[in-house]
Image 1 (cartoon, rainbow, N blue to C red):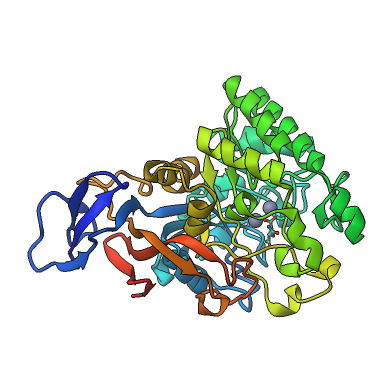
Image 2 (image 1 turned 90 degrees about the vertical axis):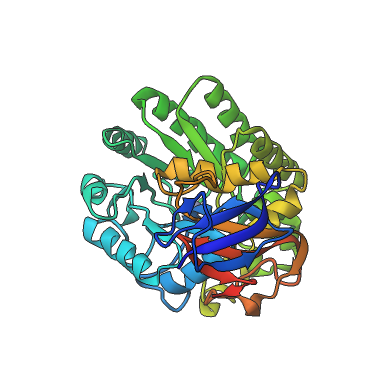
Length: 422
Ligand SMILES: NC(=O)N[C@@H](CC(=O)O)C(=O)O
Ligand SMILES: [Zn+2]
Ligand SMILES: [Zn+2]
């Protein structure tokens, strides 16, 4: 179905109509018989790309499925998501990766790009089928044991050497298990002591980030740092980039806006890995995102069923929802970021990091029509029960967030119209 998107301002700058042909490609003349979308007053951005989404299928379809996660993504303005490998079974074979890719195509709402595990079963010991996953139809380029850190430096080195051959990247969950073990559930500081919660010190992240940038330098391969959460990690990244080391990093929306003092009520909704940090870290993360030290915003959308999340704080699962609200959180946390910068950190750069040639393209004739149309002046009060996600661990419930995703177009198909699934 061809489309005319009328009157949107591209990246918040010049106003221009966008034309989409039957093949879902932007063209320079209005196609005949096209559906018209009135986008007067809306900002058009290339469809958002999420480097870090947990879709939970296969294995935990009670928390999310590839379909419901794709719906949530479309509502958030996304046209591509990278589906993390910590499913059950783990995405550690070509067959498993291809299955996720196929289910994503069947859902048809966003491009679902499987992330392959670095090690078999996320056990941190033997490398998974990295080459076979890359050569499969899913064409996996991003590998991660996310949820767990590839803590053995020798395994990390070999993974980096291996993926270098085909331009792959290892996305690391940076958490030294000796410094922050599985029980560590709250930023280590004065507050963790007061609350009596096992602390997760920033240094447990920073030593891994430092080690990995040195391994990237040594191997000439590419490391991506998932969910950076501390000022110390930012310092390491700034240094590494100045040396020309091939490293990229993402920050989550929640680490840009929420702080550790939310934990005083022991509400497990705020339990997440890495933990919420103090304001000084949040400030450093915002500055690093604005100046390019941190390359991208990635949601780490981590749905959990009630029976895993509604427990005493120490026993509850780690993780929070984030894909429907990411753009609003970024607008709220960094109101001065230009729309061009929003497009850079939420679409163009993540597409480049993931090697998705079809995504994050400029809204020009010849590009695939992956577009999100945003009302820049609206505000949305988040209602956790109005979500497409199957889970309710939503830390934004009741908050007002800046801007609103109005329409999403994926490959010329309208997936979201007037803020609802089309
Ligand atoms: N972020 C989280 O707290 N949880 C993630 C795993 C992860 O991203 O480390 C999950 O899979 O639930
Ligand atoms: Zn992680
Ligand atoms: Zn994650």
